[in-house]
Length: 227
Image (tube, rainbow, N blue to C red; front, top):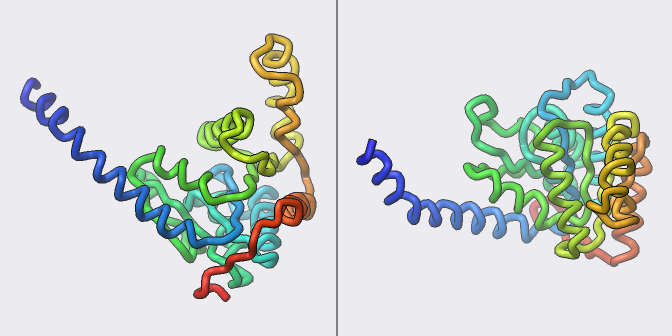
């Protein structure tokens, strides 16, 4: 036991280089994307599900407006978004895949894939190069990513990018709890919920993103390979 623990401790400093390598590869690739939007959601959503179809529609609409699509690279909603993003063949449809025992391969619709071993390096890359975030229904992972981005915007570490929750009925309970519990207890400031928008309309999602791009003047820098 002692030898095993000592070996693990000795390994720790070298792990920094693997972490740095993941950051360097992802930053080098994603910094050339141009305007991009990240779409989050459950890996368990099936192709016949209404939310799968909505994610595909949203991604395709954004891609036709020359906005790259970024996802976690897995199945479900991520597959749907990459599928829609790849259809117009105008921009990258990026999959940032995490190496897991039950989810090893990036979905087949991603035309630009980066593999990660560490969740936290992947989470940085999912956020760093996007100008908007769409959250389809999902579980713990989606909630984790939602509250991380909201916190970054709330604390002004990120600009007030559009943060859009798709599926009003799915997210209603969360909003009710935030309004009835967090805000009265003073755990968040009045107006913090205004950082979030909800809708059931894919076209509304696309229009909100396009309005933000028009407002801030985000340049349309499409990589040469996708022009």
